[in-house]
Length: 212
Image 1 (tube, rainbow, N blue to C red):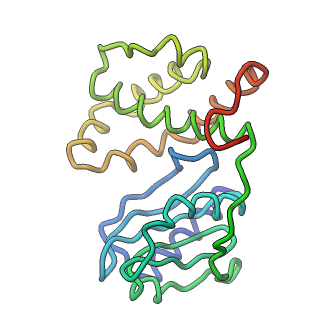
Image 2 (cartoon, rainbow, N blue to C red):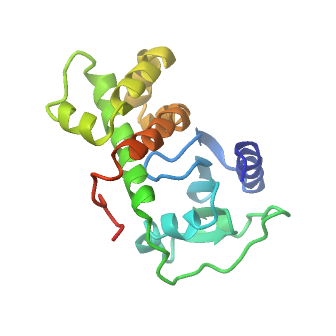
Image 3 (cartoon, one colour):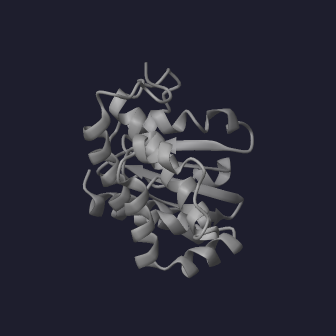
């Protein structure tokens, strides 16, 4: 699904539930796939809207939320999207006409491929190293050499992207507890470097997480 279509779908889902005070997410920095979404406040509590480029990413990422579902939190989903929140808020979701709602699939999702597993770990590194660099730009990470070997070129690309974007803007987001969303505009570009890094090191790295 193209980025523009993902954004339009996320916007439509947000409008359907009157979700306010939202943080726009322009990528997922805990997962390999491209994503658009919102973290926002619905009438009965927080709501989380996600639209992924690839359909397989929906059950794979929903699995991370599954233990939180119950009387106070549920899910509505389609092939490429899901909305998580209070049952009364989720009931108001209007599914996009191009991607109608389907039943939640509680079966074990497909395992990540070795490439997807590597890219997921790299995305999470972007999030953690990004916060470290914004907080302490003059302090070198003790694991810098290890990460440069594992993710060649990613740290430099990330630091350059933060410098261009404005570290002060990101530092303010940390203070306001809106850090995760604030870094996501940099996600697509830096995750592209993760993909190049995998092409360079794939023969020398074992699966880093969930892949077997």
